[in-house]
Length: 296
Image (cartoon, rainbow, N blue to C red; front, side, top):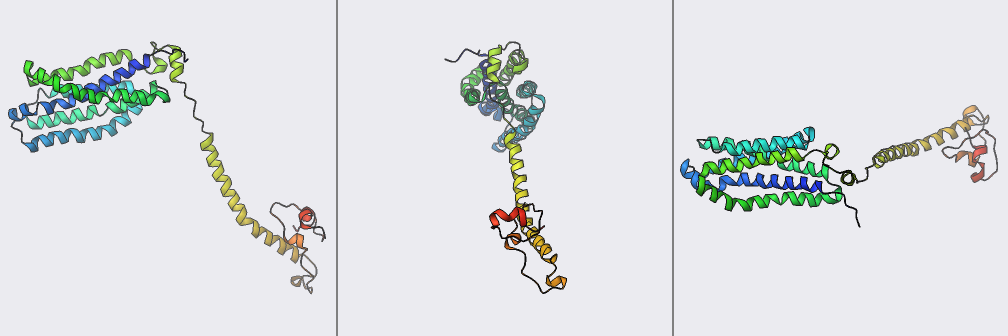
């Protein structure tokens, strides 16, 4: 039976779930208010498509920007900036007076909301061991569908009670309520005073990844290159050694002699790495004679 380690990490996961729920709730509001807004601002289908495209393009760009930013400043501050920007942008929809104004508000909303997933995924890697990360990501990502399911019930009710301006204001304000909980509960595990030591040890229980494999791979490549170089140079050295031995003999044609038999067989088949101290001939078999009669 696994000892109890604490459940604070699941509180953090629930914060990610609610942030994702609010994220998708805010982006769905304009779609449900479209019949009202197109009469209010005399939108054409082309106008509405441009508003939607402004959000989509900004969201795509924001993913790249926030991914880099969160890696530099951390998930706590990164999430704070993201939720602040998208909540202000969501509430700003209530103040715009033109189609262009809606396009600008949607663009800022897209940039702000794009920080949700980079921040949430980084938070999971900080707070969960590898064997629980897939579950944690599945839990917080389910908020995207929950948010889309809440909108059909919440927005018509707010619209009927308070009007379309309130729909943007109320849903945008939810982000600021979430920020209060985030700033209170969240800190990286090593600095979080609310986290018990057994749970901290469990979060950090993944074995440290060694760099020996990477270093070994580099040395293996170097060793292979050196072996290949030796294989290429070795035969050339053998030929040069045999030629020098032959040229050193008094009767060799190049030294004015008639040319006795060339070097003994064992000397002409010198192996790489063989160390010899004698040039005398021998009749010993090659397997045992290398170190005694090879040419230098």
